[in-house]
Image 1 (cartoon, helix red, strand yellow):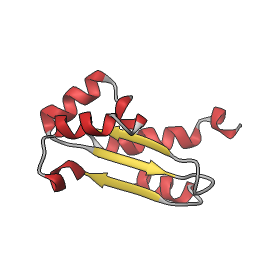
Image 2 (cartoon, one colour):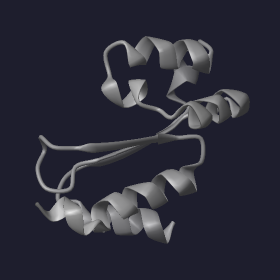
Image 3 (cartoon, one colour):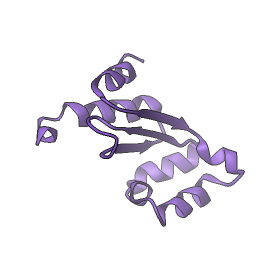
Image 4 (cartoon, helix red, strand yellow):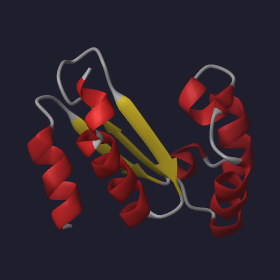
Length: 99
């Protein structure tokens, strides 16, 4: 939880954490991922091993955060909430991101 609070503190704008949004549509996670990959590049770029584990666990974690403005955001899609938050924090603290 501390990492998530740190992500929130580091963002000037919105932080959104959703878990299992596919279940609201009563569709399989594989179908949901395929559908969203067609119009959302974040879903199209999920590594194959992460996608396979998401489907095996039937778990979708999506962390989206806006560090500086309401226009530029980052998304982390994973099967583990703690890992998604850790990756998000890594993105925010990466010195290359200061450009």
